Image (cartoon, rainbow, N blue to C red; front, top):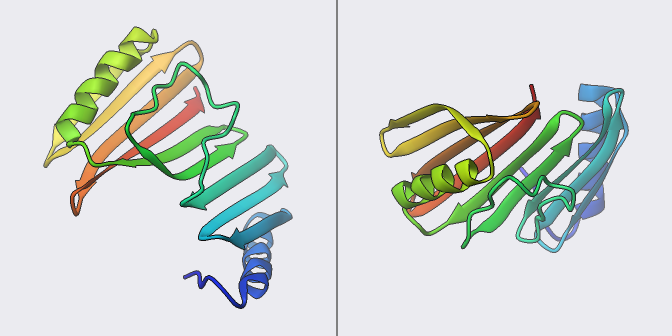
Length: 152
């Protein structure tokens, strides 16, 4: 649990220590303005993560991956293996899912799996040497979209 305001520096240090203990790697944590930003390096390469109102999609995020609009970025992570992006929108799951199917195909992605159950949709796409997993679900009137892009 994160507490914003006083004690941010102590929280940052505690999180940095937890990351070092879990991964053996150094990380820099910045908690400010209702956001969390973490950056570090592992043996596989560098990683960044941002969570909160000012979370931003990495500048080098692949341009052939559709980003749903209108949406807000809730979290973004860049790792040596790929990316994970969490978006939120007020649009319904069915509309978001239909849009993703159309847009991913138009960008040259091949749909490998399509599952719809209990108001949720999950898609798996392949293109070149990459895999894109897209999960769309609704909770409390908000639709959550999770994009995970990785090398095969």
